[in-house]
Image (cartoon, helix red, strand yellow):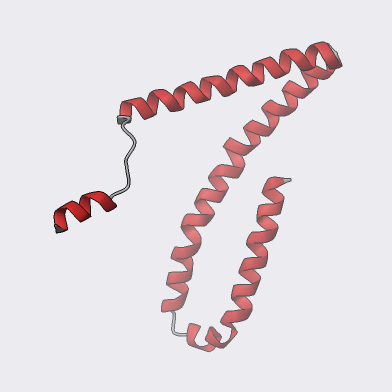
Length: 121
């Protein structure tokens, strides 16, 4: 009775193997690349060659900025801030600041909100 009930409640898993997921993800990436290439060709015909070149250059600059600056900065900040706060809590003088925790939390929320807006811009 119990084993049958346990088997019935389990959600169905996808039958794809890890290799199948890898093939699927690479196929989707290739499809997005082909889609972008088609967009560039269509935009080149519609808006002209010079504007298409400017668009390609802006895409390359944006991608370069994202993957060389923004992503490493976000990863390093998101991994360093919890450790820094953990070390800060261990300091004896932090007990004096514990009354201001709500203010610090509000400032951190505001900071991350502004930082996210800056990254999106």
